[in-house]
Length: 91
Image (cartoon, rainbow, N blue to C red; front, side, top):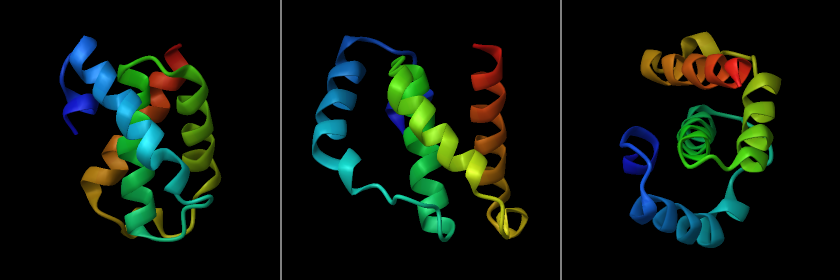
């Protein structure tokens, strides 16, 4: 969450690079539930903050493809998804 919310700097970029190398390949291929939705949303915000355009686009495509029952999920998660998608349109 620090990578997603706090201003980008070298330490957070290094932390993101480490975490991406360690955990990124274990992210779900499709969003099937709220846990998947949460994981993809936070990773997408982090990718946007450290300007990892390729990873951001990959994760944003997952958010765009997912629609079933999204409205029933945590309102905060829906807000994060809206922010991610709005930011991606502006770029």
